[in-house]
Length: 193
Image 1 (cartoon, rainbow, N blue to C red):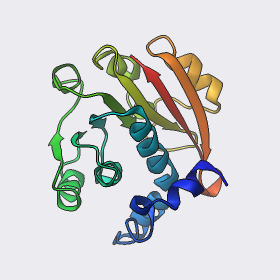
Image 2: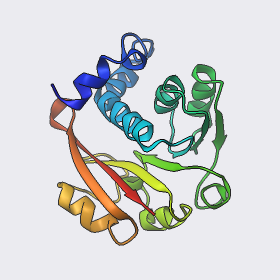
Image 3: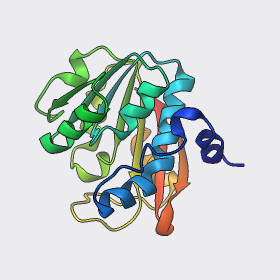
């Protein structure tokens, strides 16, 4: 049994959390990224983190998993106000803000143990700058996905490419591939700034 199958047996990940998406596209996205969110949540739990900042939090899927795991502090940042409204509705215990991390001081000024960046770094030109903004000695968890998507700035096809690209900024970096539905692959990385 793989890690994802084991996590699905835990109560926060069982049944229905992802079943209430209204739009078919949203359901497919949730289905594709469910294993990624579950693994990210497990990495956060194992790290012993008490506070998380998530860049590109979208509709709060990971936030809800972290809440259900008992992580007390969370700040979700995204540039899409409509998605943040949904995140606030499903996870009102946490703080969500419309923010561009390149134009605000959230990554430098907020207090957090772990920074999470999913579905973000492969779409911004200054991905290494974003990682440099993370406070020193903080754990950084992120994902980049393989596959053709409009707006993608860089393409990763292997865990070694991800390791080579981000190791100048992150130490103790580990990368693991996660095979998603429809032959897609996400690369989950875990390192220290």
